[in-house]
Image (cartoon, rainbow, N blue to C red; front, side, top):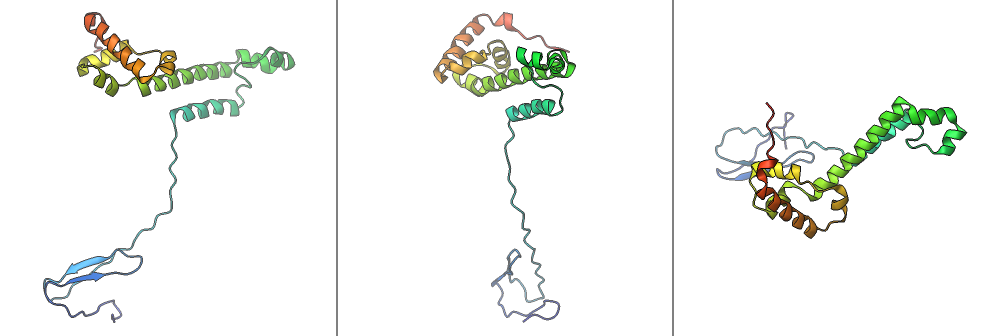
Length: 186
């Protein structure tokens, strides 16, 4: 039984191990090393609310940005049809020649190119090239910049095709390395 400050006595021998537990607090273990007064502090357990983490992909971010252009009313359609221009001439002309619609079209083109670069990087990357051919880190950058496959090829190639492409391209790169030197900018 504890006193009004929470103090109490326990008969224990030197070397005994005591375990202190209370619900909603972290348990504490004490090894009795002397017969003096010991102070034990129990730390409250911090309960956190459940957190849901959702992945945001680059593709989703780019699509959301493009949708924001449309939500702001900056254009109706990036590729207006002839019928939409005839039925609503003012909107059609704005969609064809307006500054905001033109910016949205440029961003849409950038988005497509960025998504293609991401797809290429998923299949044609440093670890794959280093595993496929024996190449120094210096030459790796130059090789990958000069021999990056096209998106249309990567879409249809199997892993075997990519490895074959790397080996064949690296052979050509080795034989003609001097012409692929990257100039350093100062």
